[in-house]
Image 1 (cartoon, helix red, strand yellow):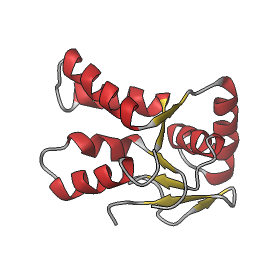
Image 2 (spheres, rainbow, N blue to C red):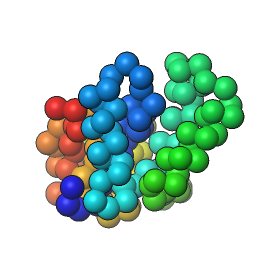
Image 3 (cartoon, rainbow, N blue to C red):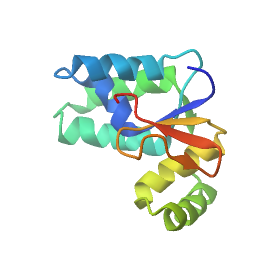
Length: 136
């Protein structure tokens, strides 16, 4: 995987899926690619929320999963500037606020590719960030 990758929470969560082995393997390839992938504090928060709410994990297991992902990825901290950029991107590209926040963080990290299952595969954002669905 050439270039810098940013990974959306919907991809990271497949690392912990037991019922979709092909998607789990694809997520592992993205996160453990040739270069360290980027995530944001938003991705960690969404991950913790879903692991608790949908996977029904206890907090110690969630903490271990978050620590594992933090160790595997570089983490971008969402700032007020990230939020301001997300609002501009949301208006321009018509994504939801939280998807726009992912886009903003990826752009701030200088990533070339955003791995996401939920956004339009192949879309180019700001002429420099390509959205790629790793499961397509």
